[in-house]
Image 1 (cartoon, helix red, strand yellow):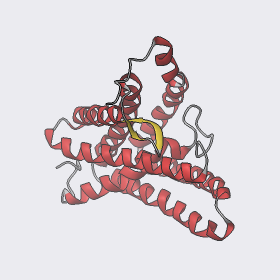
Image 2: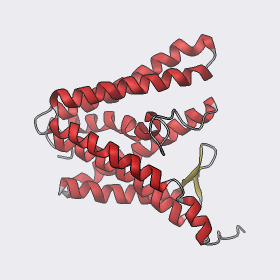
Image 3: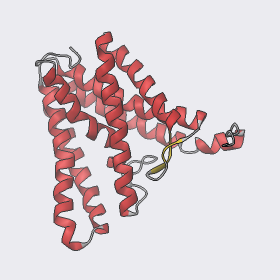
Length: 231
């Protein structure tokens, strides 16, 4: 019989949130930039996507140093696909008539998945989600992130039809996070880079978006070209 996990002490709870201030400060800078470019659209949104792609490729090239020389060309090509496909999906979604709401919905669901999983996981603790891949992630965090992100998506969509797309995007986002964690563990690195204080690299911050953006584009197509993607 397993012994129930004791509630965290105030000191333990404080250590669980030791990086919250730095993460919040980084988000306070980056989120307005992303939302501003999204709202402006057109060339501004395209420039942001190109800059992000360049930053992602810079980090990926750095990660390639941990790959044997013979496999580096394939690894670099995989990185181009990994970053370019979501970038194309984000550009296509935003460029559609009324596509602003689609991308906003996507970003809110992914961001709230991350925030919800972080907060609930640190507060509730409990069984680990995938200890061999990412020891910090918990089942409670995964469920909390899913519930909170779907609720946030409903606030954006103002339609119960958004529940299923929101849940799909949240689950895919968490899967993308785990996939990136598995890659870093295999390469023997903690972060993909040091681009964003408190978050590590761009891949560390955008792993959920990179996984979910192509799925959101598919959902939009399945909605028979309708805007928003949950129709």
